[in-house]
Length: 214
Ligand SMILES: C[S@@+](CC[C@H](N)C(=O)[O-])C[C@H]1O[C@@H](n2cnc3c(N)ncnc32)[C@H](O)[C@@H]1O
Image (cartoon, rainbow, N blue to C red; front, side):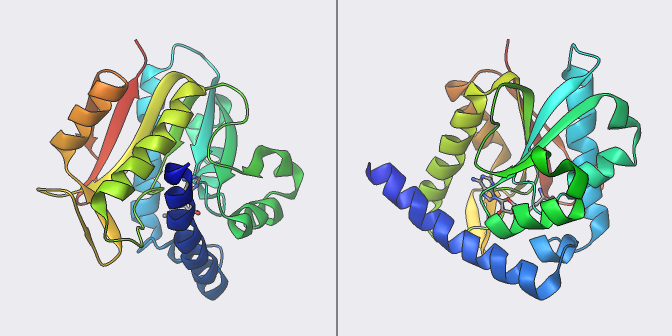
């Protein structure tokens, strides 16, 4: 119960921040706090290439958790991944989901408000979902992250692929959460199973983590 109340408080503040950012900057990388599109796209490329490598299927069903205004779907549609990915996007923020609906009027059914996939998917992907953090309580934020990963884990047949900014030790500065690569791997391994990481190519300090079901 307490856990749900504190998670709701964390989400309330990030929801407000994303809402006002989207209103100010519009449907573009700056509207979801990315510095530019190249780091946003480099993150997508890494998560999708890992997913492709791990998937035993020709058509892989993915959930984009924290889909923002739908940039990953645009990226997929203009890439070689388009034939092999079955996409759905979810976001806690109503305005983000509305932005997806207007960006993809024929594909509204692919986007909804939520925290995890509606039905089982092969992989759940998270790009930048846990970067913005409007609390100074590292332990509460990490509990929030792992709580969210746990609920997506149950919905993901083959596993989770996510990115986080990383530093020498976990910290929150300028409202951005930095994980520690080793600590994150240890905790995810204990909770879910073997976890691997690669430094996200072309994105400084960003690490892509792979939690693969055995
Ligand atoms: C930095 S933005 C990235 C958006 C998108 N992934 C991209 O790269 O363009 C993070 C997004 O995650 C959403 N988000 C944050 N926490 C979430 C959660 N627990 N479940 C679903 N969405 C979440 C936010 O509302 C926001 O739209």
